[in-house]
Image (cartoon, rainbow, N blue to C red; front, side):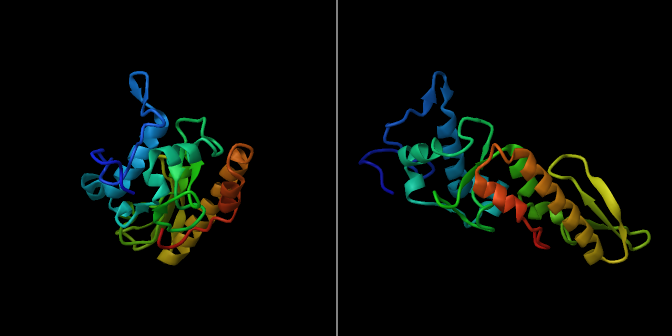
Length: 200
């Protein structure tokens, strides 16, 4: 989306026509910050090097306009919680486009729980590591937190992965029930149907 003649595009693509201020007193307005970081994740070269999982991601034409993004944002469930995060791929698995149809707002606890992290997975399926000493495979799950919980030792990586999958999916459902009254009903439904994939 092209801006007005002479206007400066944000991260080369975003346009702010001034309808909504980018400032809140001496600070960046929080919705503007969400918009700016969304564009940065998709179009800033340094950001893409630091977080290559966003390579190939893009932003819809409407979302490139801050005014349209702002108007969409304040209509979303959870918009009043400044620490909630913009999610693009819970409703549509592996979605690469930030748009009105695909995005929702989620508490950080949920978004951290379902985020993919290929860089940490290593040679084995998610949640699985191999013991060099005896050749067995351990399953662990951090449930979106910093501390890993040991789920058991197994003779093959697939059995370890299935233990992880069962534990993670069960926990996601628990969290969905915990936040049911607060989150978008579409998010609740997606979490209740959430399936851990071996490629996560």
